[in-house]
Image (cartoon, rainbow, N blue to C red; front, side, top):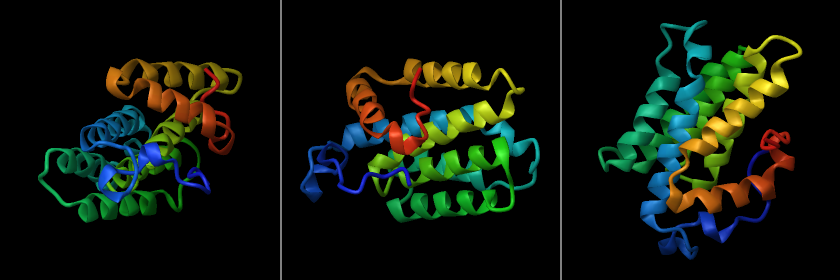
Length: 171
C-alpha cells in the first residue's frame, strides 16, 4: 500500500476540490516518468520484447502534452504492472515503477509510488552489501530531478509517507 488512507488535498486537483494545479500535476507526472525510466533497463534486460512498462512511461508523458486521455495513461499503467506479475527483484520493481508513473494521470499521489519502486529496483539490482548505498544514490538522483515548483511538495510527501513506502526515502 503506497497511498494514504486519507487523501492529501495537495494531490487532488482544484476541479475535484483539492489544491493541486494542472501544471503541478503535469510536473508530478513527468518526474514520476523520469524516475521510472531511470531504472527501466532492469525490466527490459529480462523482457526486451515486452513494451508495456515503456509504453506506460510514454503515455504518462503524452498525457502531459494533451495527446492522450487520462484513462489511456492509467490503463497503460495497469498493463505495466501486469508485466511485473511473474517477475521478482529489480525487473519487477522497475515495471511497477512504470505502472505507478502511468497512474499519476489518474491520481497524482502515485508519483511517490513510481519513485519508491524505482529505489527498490536500484537496491535489488545491486550486490548484497551495496544495496542501501544504491538506494540512497537513486533517491538523491530523483531529488536532483525535482522541478523547483514541486520540490517541497514531494519532499514533504516523502516524509509523510516514508513508512508506507518501505522507508526508501531515508536518503
